[in-house]
Length: 137
Image (cartoon, rainbow, N blue to C red; front, side, top):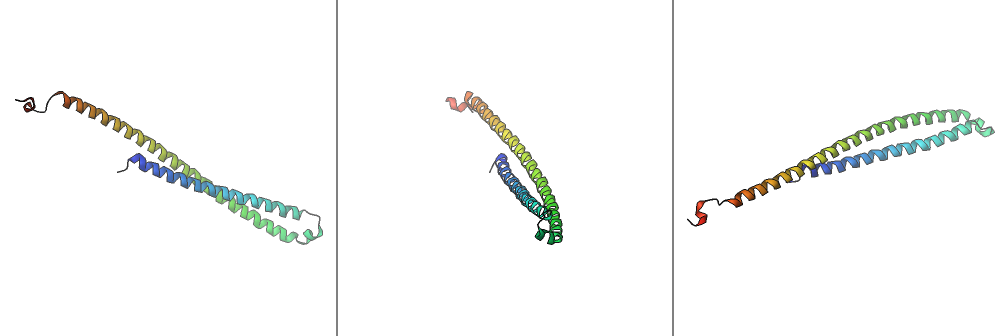
């Protein structure tokens, strides 16, 4: 049978893996937002350009900019959800780790107590024979 601390150690490892997964989701969403910000900058530059071709497409650029800003707001919401989940997973992992450390301390204390009790039992049983027949009576 596995000790409680070993079971908790496995749970901590799983929880830390979940935490890393949510961190990568946050990073991916942040990367997408960065790319989107670059695209927004390009569209804004094109809208402000004095080039005659860009003036022809200004209506298209305006609608494109609206869609890009809307997508950025959506990604911001997703990123906030991922960040909240990441913090939640981190807090769970920290609590599990504390429980694991407490369980390990308890197991170590119990093992030390048992070894002391074994020493006492050996000392008590070694001092006197179990019956009078052992002495050759």
